Image 1 (tube, rainbow, N blue to C red):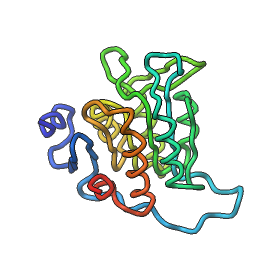
Image 2 (cartoon, helix red, strand yellow; image 1 turned 60 degrees about the vertical axis):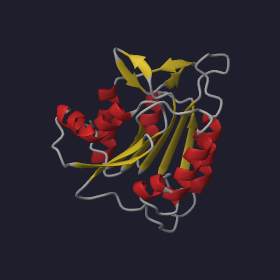
Image 3 (cartoon, one colour; image 1 turned 180 degrees about the vertical axis):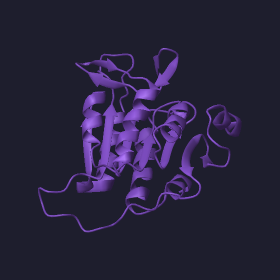
Length: 212
């Protein structure tokens, strides 16, 4: 079970609360659950950085790995946050790292189970081709942004991203990571992702957004 999985990864038992609805999971710090995103007035024009980064990697249309609904899902998430959100389509890992600077939330839409040295990892894009990096590299990247005081919530709507989510908590130290334990239907992405983003944008906690 998940407690055994967490212990096997070296995470102290009781250090996380696992919230489950169907196969979607949010891993959070039990002692200090992430507060709703602040509803502060926006800074003056041309000076504000987005609080939310949305990345979508649909893969090329001619590819058998193409996800036809990913861009629609990402644009619905962007619409939920409005001017607070930056959308990157088919971005590389390096460009995602750069764009996360100062962001509190990262929504990832795309393949979550690309194969790399026996791991299931998210798929990025570089030079028109699929790009993947190790779970450890992704978690270390997240940790840098956490330690700079910004990144607090990551939402993966890709298939089979539970191991990645656990690493983001254990290594990346992200307060809350929402991920998918099993396969996730591409067609369901826009409805689920859009609804989840709207709930978060309106100040709901990840658990409340998940339960809606």
